[in-house]
Structures are given as structure tokens and as C-alpha cells.
Length: 106
Image 1 (tube, rainbow, N blue to C red):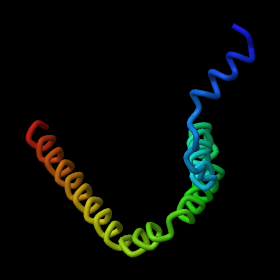
Image 2 (tube, rainbow, N blue to C red):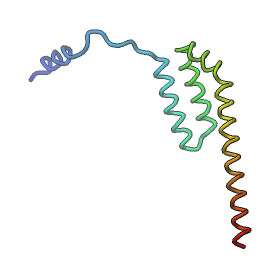
Image 3 (cartoon, rainbow, N blue to C red):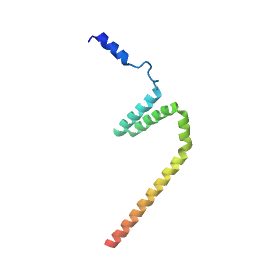
């Protein structure tokens, strides 16, 4: 099979119209991957900067999503605080039960 025939077969299989290319999405995704690599290599500050930059670029593509996230942030923080309070109560209860067990054994 000749090179010309092969190139025609490849061109026949390509779609007529390619989907739109979003450079913001590519930058956001690649910065998340780069941030993960930096984090795993121990460069936490650089990882945070790269991920924050990528997240900002990603949010520029969808400003409504950024607005919704900003408006729901207090609710997420409240939920996180509630979880931390529950974990703290659980740890305190485990410590109390451990102390009682040590007193009864010793």
C-alpha cells in the first residue's frame, strides 16, 4: 500500500468538524496534574501556587460556577466545622474510655 493511499484512508476516517478546543480547560487540567506532581515531590508551596492558578483559569471559563461556589462557601465551612467538632468529641470519648479501662485494669 502506497503512502498516498494510506494518507487518503486516514483523511477519510477523520471527522469533518472537530469539537471546539478549550485552552482554559487544558491549562486547568495540566496545572492540577503538575500540582499533584509537585506535591508528591515535597514542594508543597509551589504545588499550591500552581493548583491555585489552574483553578483560577478553570473558573474563568465558568464564571457562574465560581459565583455559586463563592455563595455556598459559608455552608461548606459550617459543615466542615461540624465534622471537626464531631471528630473531636469522638476522640475525647475514646480517650475517656481508655482512661477508665486503664484504671480498671491497673
